[in-house]
Image (cartoon, rainbow, N blue to C red; front, side, top):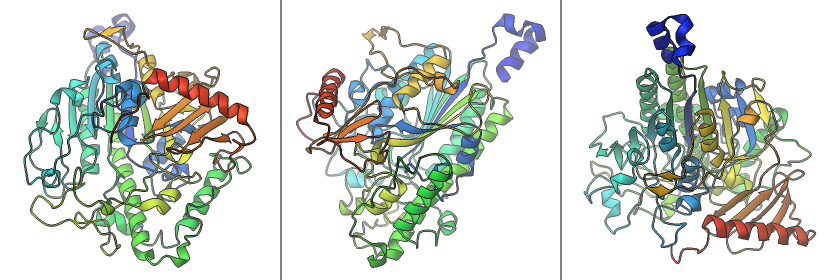
Amino acid sequence: MFRLLRALSLAGFGAAAALGADARPNIVVIMADDMGYSDAGCYGGEIETPNLDGLAANGLRFTNFYNASRCCPTRAALLTGLYPHQAGVGRMTFNQGSPGYEGRLKPHAMTVAEALRAAGYSTAMVGKWHLSLTKRTPKNAAWVSHRLDLGRFSDPQTYPVGRGFQEHWGTIWGVVDFFDPFSLVHNTKPVASVPDGFYYTDAINDRAAAFVEKYGKLDRPFFLYVAHTAPHWPLHALPEDIAKYETAYAVGWDAIRESRYRRMVDRGLIAADTAVLSPRHDKERRWEDNPDKEWDARAMAVHAAMIDRLDSGLSRIVAKLKHIGEYENTLIFFLSDNGASPELPSRFGPGFDRPSHTRDGREIAYDTEKKVMPGPQLSYNGIGPMWANAANTPFRYWKKEQYEGGTATPFIVHWPAGLKTAPGAVTHRPGHVVDIMATALDVGKARVPPYFRGRATTPVAGESLVPIFQGRERGPERTIYFEHFGARGIRKGGWKLVSPAGKPWELYDLANDRTETRNLAGAEPGRVRQLAADFEAWAERAGVYPLPSGR
């Protein structure tokens, strides 16, 4: 709106088109971290997410959208439109000596920020980067506790402002203390301290709203990437948010899975005849026999509180878009970087990205016996596998694995001026996080040139989602590939071949068994061989091989 009004004020109403007022949409990508497939209310969850629900009710939800199963690989794929190995981040942010595992974005992997900026967009980012090399030393626990200075967090040339973003406020590393995050920077300058009452999720949403106002008033569209760390461990939330869910999870993981599943069926997200509720992880472990009910219920309540707080802050971003008149022509994407996490960081204790103390010297509890309740700053823990299984209802497994529970993501698209689908529509067409850059290039009239900054570039692997936005077919269903730490997968048509690291292939007919409960590998050996050959051919092309020699 500001762009159009500026053109009109300069030349009169009839001359706006002649002036070429830029009608391209703003693009806002909002990513949650370790949020389960069914956590949000609009995907069947009991967590209060009225703002996400509102975007979904007036937008489009995908039920078959995929990520790369872990934080940094998904971020690499989102920002480059390439599979993670092609971008150099096949595993984590360590250089493991193989081209696909350099631990940072390769120079030839042009980012969406670089492409859109070259096409005239303003570009800004808030939150978690996790795409620069990180280092391990015996002193890391003190360093990430703000009690020791080991120098730069990483090479500033690899920060967001070195990869196409005009401005970035957020963290360079992956894991943070939500009340006092390590590696917080504004552009390349470290933020020395945070004020009393600081909570990172609020700060991200506040800064995002400020960036909307700052860049939305210019005479060109903007691209804004809002990368949350919630609800990634540690389980840190504000007391008033935890109180809302104080009794919600005392019913146990089975009851939560069953109620979420029923809502998903009722809302048309899944079909009961083709997506049964998968068996509970650890079939022998019953909630009724759980000696840690109080702690486990509290852990899931904190997880819910973290998502609740993330959602509440989205209202400030939306309100700011409306205030500056850019709401109708802003394309908003929302997704999670992977399925909910089964990790229990308490088992590892302090070190690498886990602090030993707070900045003022208080010791942090890494409690393996579930005696210290999660939520406050002095507790470091996660929800564990049973609740992760529930958060990913109706699927099996979780973050890192290539089953649907690890790679399927809630994906909401909201664009009043551009979506031609009915408000609240649901699409079952598959997509992948690499499609976000392809879509941004499409609507932003941008491109990846053959050379950028003197280097040959790699063409994007994704496909534009615009045909789906317009209610049209996108063409033949393409093949989607997965690999992370030896866990592999390939989806082709309605079939999916998948295996945990070092295990045989399993085959699932997703059209009739979306929750991967019936392994057909023994009945379809020919199909297994063909899909496995397709996977191996892609792995060679994409840089999965050679596998790194060490961790």
